Image (cartoon, rainbow, N blue to C red):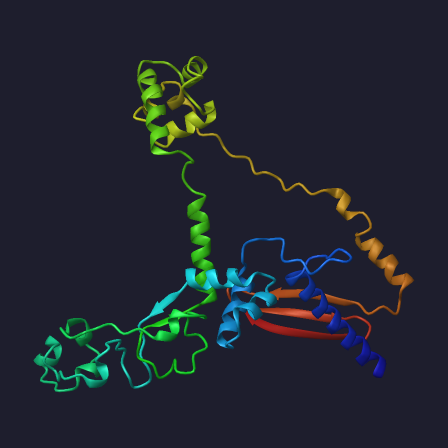
Length: 321
């Protein structure tokens, strides 16, 4: 029984070590310090660590050490992906007016309050008295002007009626993916370059010349290849259109062939299942842990199974996508 417990504990420690090593570190040469991550961009796991660290009121330096980044990277990430929420507190409506504690208006600002004969203090009105009040002055928390710049770990968050600034990992990841996609979309072409190409190509296309003929006789003034010129014309960057190229409009749209994933077969040398079975025979007492996932319907619960082979024990962890 003691040997089985030892094997289970050693297997769990091995999994934890492998996870921390693969996620947070890269191999370090002898005599050198710890390297940071090779990848430059933050992942969703990194952003979740940042959000958790902010909720625990940890410093930027401590959070940066957990994700193997510089503390300035954490600071820029937080300030670039702030989420503003106009939420109040339990039994207290949102109000960011500087005069809310000594407000002198009682139902004489909001048309809704006047219509319904309400004589409540305007500072507690939920109908929008703050936006209509002539004495309104926006109030901001002084703590947001210095690190950590957010309200994630603030103890007064559930009593404050001012505008909240939060860092939410999932929202930050979505903004990052949108910016990344937007920066790589479109054409790498300035407006001046487009006008210069259009001035040369469009008159000749309408005169009946082909793009191949135009590029062959105007190499000094056209700084793109033939395929790029066809792409610009097909996407409407020139005044001339595909209809001005009689042969092109007769061609059918080509079907794109799926590119097969090429794998270097040399990476499988010494790593096949037969080698694993041979290694098990040579080391029968070595603890082995098998991982697998069981997925049902898309978007529903998923099981992560961990099987300890020698003690014949299997654990399952349930999570939701």
